[in-house]
Length: 144
Image 1 (cartoon, one colour):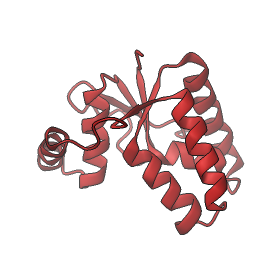
Image 2: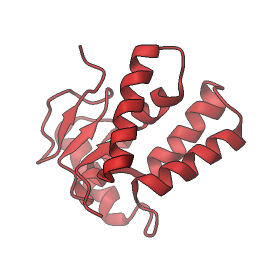
Image 3: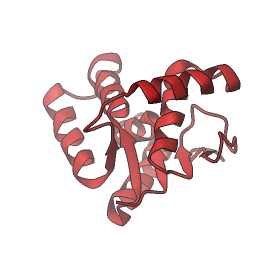
Image 4: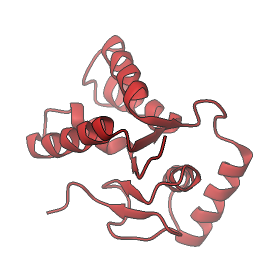
């Protein structure tokens, strides 16, 4: 499966969070397009962060509903790490990105994972819009 865009956790969360209808609509459109075109990627890290955020941190839904969503995401998006997990190479790449770019480790791991699956873009509001991380460019879908 060829993928061009990596979706950060915040995009997935906003798609199911009704507290900001504008962000929700943008996130749903992005997620729907990625699933329909089969050109989007997420990682096992994103799935874990999604579950933690919607079930524990924000209490947006019960665990059973989050699991249903995760299964739908797995069916419609490429999931990096589903067979190999977070490899030593990814950890070392993330550490190098953290040191070079001064990103938080978990954000650096998102960048490293997106690069490892060949994505040209990361859709995220948590990273600097327009920033080029070694060939992976961040696009904030909620800007403007």
